[in-house]
Image 1: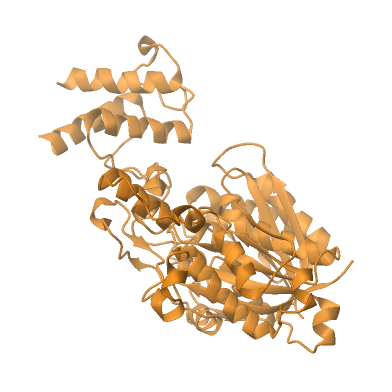
Image 2 (image 1 turned 30 degrees about the horizontal axis):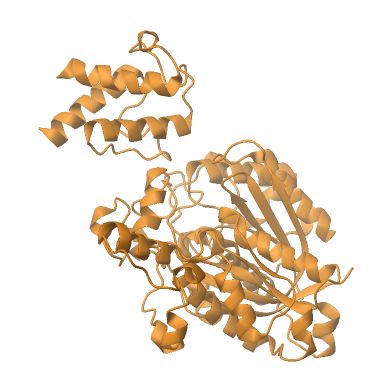
Length: 89
Length: 402
């Protein structure tokens, strides 16, 4: 289950960044992948649709979304995993 | 070039359904934002807005009118009635041919779209009311206004998202100044507080779930409002000759385009519009005592706007007052500049500066005098009203005391 979430999230981010999945490393930041604020909002929408979950994210306070840490690809994967467990469990 | 003055004002918004009540709410720093009372609100993540309460169309219009008037048209017509009554102008004679209507709206009849999409998609109906198109079109309010008051000159509607009203009023001003019209009825209206209208905004993730706190460090987004404000702009000599009461002079206007990003604001684009309005009005920066800010309460707008004001005004930026009344009436999108012009008129005419309410924590990136939480008495002789739209379209008006 966990790796399935990771694969889907990485695929969504890779598509947004127009990169190969292999080039999206867990330690990468969205900024380093060239994803801007609109790209971020679009990625979150894609994640919500893919997992049928609600992601608590407000673009006005990107650093304060304690429930949804967007600092790296890895942190996003972890956040989605816990949301999926919470909302679909 | 002709001078242009304002001789009438009217409004319907979340704070009050007239100008006097709106001024009183501004003075008291009252908040008109609250729980939304709309269909399917439980399916929305954002459940607050600056909604016009206790709106009763039957109290103002007959059945034949109501089937043609979307809520944004209803607000416009009532606001216009107040403005025309105050101005004392009658357009039945020759003046009607020399006068027109320019209004701003971003969405037009959004409630009509929403209701009828529901009918055909959700309820599976195969038939809609015959007047859906004339009811929802963006120019419906301008056209009904022209019919109601016999305004037969230049009339149209401007849609530039959150700058629509400022663009509309700026164009009305230019038309009179250039001699193309004697009087113009102008302003704007919006009524987007329905399920689809809010759901669309939710998607962008820039909305606050609890309050609009412009310039405050803990601000977390915008809150939508609804309503209208309508003004009578008139040739100064014409107004003077008939002894009309002059509320304020419209002295300058400038518009710029960022040509940069579809949602992110630009300091340079905003600063060029502000500086352009000053130049157009023949004002020095240090003559401006108050700015009605665009001040949406988003992270991006407020810091960009403060930086633009600092760039244009230099040291004087620390001496002028700048407030966002969106904290009280919400963001009326295409109608917002019109309602906000009321705060400019109040500043010039009554010497009272409307506050930015909900202000809780200073933000070093917004370190101007934002008139936090309480209205202030101050003599000002010139003011600006900022509007910076999605799509990078900026429109700034300059007003002077009559």
